[in-house]
Structures are given as structure tokens and as C-alpha cells.
Length: 438
Image 1 (cartoon, one colour):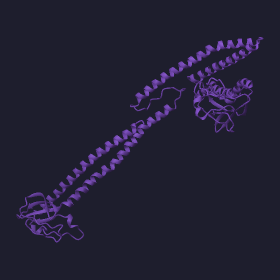
Image 2 (tube, helix red, strand yellow):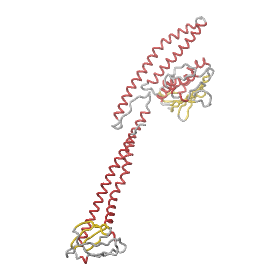
Image 3 (cartoon, helix red, strand yellow):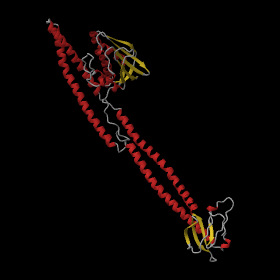
Image 4 (cartoon, helix red, strand yellow):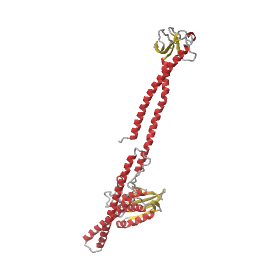
């Protein structure tokens, strides 16, 4: 399984954010906790300073909370050396006279206190204290309030990272889809406008490869075309000579061999024509787009295949013909129809039938060619569109170029070919081509 760069980036960025936020949370909570304690120490000092301005007798040394107030959250003011002053043991505090001045932490009866010792104008020493549990609770609350924005920010950051990376990689998905739409008849470089800088070198290398491939295919096409043209003349001469010899009186063995020769020459001539068609439909650098009347081309293709159909005793006819006009290259459109009909006639056994129909359905022209031949196994449907591929057991020594030519022409025209079984469930093949009307 190939690693996902997008998933890897999301995971590592998320882990980095979590680690950074965890460190920030720990540091912020510690700083907030310490700040809260310092603030409460300052409050203790301020209360003690206010009380030190008056005699202790007027400073509410015997503190009693008002109704509805929690005595544990208040400051406790005690003269040094005094005994208990409250019936509530949670806020009672007896302090020795030996306490040093200033802030300090005390523990009495299992209760920890934070206190500051001062001396008033009358020379009386006293302490202002508060339970540590109260202070710790206040400090924890302060730290929590400080952490809440960070805790809310973490999932927000993770969502933002995921969304941003998905949007960034969406351009790669669009680029991939554009490359997928390319085929062997369209090897133009992919537009690199708007492509991320990180991907641009890869796309530029891909475009250079496309240019080299286009040159190689063009050289191959020219070779096929030139070879077919060079073979056409000698084959035509041989065919004429064979026809002339056929008019002579020959022994039976010679006549039989001459018949075999003439059949071979016809097959060779047909192969040369198909090679020329294949070179034309594959190598059109800029197909000429015209308004093409398919019904006229269908009639012409049927007429061209009638001699072969007559020789094999095949019933070739048109069962439906509607006027249909498309936009495209007339040469490619005819090559598609001609090879579809010719292929059906060639692979249909003698005495069979080939039915051709042209109709308009849903704003598209639909060409259907059905034969009573051996058909094509489902596992070989895609393979038969490759050049020179023939299905064994058909009994026909064809070139294997007919469907390859039809596929190349359909791609250039912008239509779609489908192969399948006949609709009436009889043996044979159903060839259909569909293209939007002009």
C-alpha cells in the first residue's frame, strides 16, 4: 500500500500541535497558578496593612462571618499568643508569639494556612491568615479559566489543519483527473497554470514525457502510413495480374492455387487499407470539425461491405435509419462506421445476418450494428480494442485492426463505443456507438 502524503502531513502536524499545546497548557497553568498565589499573598499583605493602622481591639479580631457567608473563604485575624476565638474548628487558629514577621505557611490541627504577621501602631503583633485549601481552589480556578481558550483552540487548530491540507491536495486530485482524461489521441501537455510550486517540476517532467511520446507515436504513424502506401502499388499490380491469369484456361490444381492467391491478395489489400485508416485516425494533429450527416455515411459503409456480404451469403441490411447530424471529422466518422460494419460482416459465418440501425435517442445519435457471429467473451471485450488482437476460434483470419480503428476514431470524435450481447439474446455481438447531436 502506497503511503499517503496528505495523511502523513495531517498526522504529524496534528501531533506537533498537540505537543505544542500540551507544553503551552502546562506552562500556562503553572504560571496562572503561581500568579494567583502571588495575588492572594498581596491581598493578605494589604489586609494586614489596613488592620495595622488601628488598635487591634477595633480590628474585629474575634471574626464572625455574616449569615449566608462561608466562613472558610474569609480571612482570619488573630493576635499572637491568643487562644481559640471561634466555635468552628475549620476557621479556629491559635498562634504563638514566636512567629517571625512576614508571609509564611503554617499547619495546625492538620489544616494548612497561609499567614502574614504584622505589628500595629500600638505595638501589638497579629496575623492575618487564610486556609490553603481556599487559596489552592482559587488558584486552580484561575488556571482553569486561563486554559479554557487553549483547550478550545486545540480542536479548532486540528480542524483548520485538516481542511487546509485537504483543500491544498484537492488541486492534485483535479490535476490527476485532468491527466486521466488524456488518451493516446490527445497527448497535449497538461496546463500548468495554478499548479502548486511543489508539484510544478513533476508536471513539467510529465509534459516533457508527453512531448517525447507524441513524437514517437507520430513517427510510428508515419512509418505505418508510408509502409502501407509503398505496399499498395505492388499489391494492386499483383491483383490485376492475378485477375488476368484467372481468365486463362488452367488445370484444376492451378485454378485452385490461383483462387487461394487471389483471396490472399484481397486480404492483403484490405489490411493495407486498414493500416492507412489506422494511421489517419491516430495521427490527426488537428481533426477538421464539420457537421457530419451520419445517415449518409452509414449508407456508404453498407454499400462498401455488400460485395463481401454477398460472397459469404450474409444478409446485410439497415433495419432503422433516422437522420442524425454530429460535429466532428468526416474521415474519422466514416472510418468508425466502415470498420464497425466490415468487422461484423467478416466475423459472421456464411448464411448469417448483420443488422445496422441509426436512431436519435435523448439528444444523441446512436449507431447499432448487430451480427450473428461468435461474439466476444466478456473477459476479452477491452482487449479486442488493441491493435492486431484477434480472438481465437472465430474462424476468420482478420487483421485485428477494425475495432482498434473504431476506438481511436470514437475518442477523437468524443463519442462512446460499447460491445455486448444482442438484445434478443441470440448468439452474436452488438456494437453500439453514441455521440451527442450537433
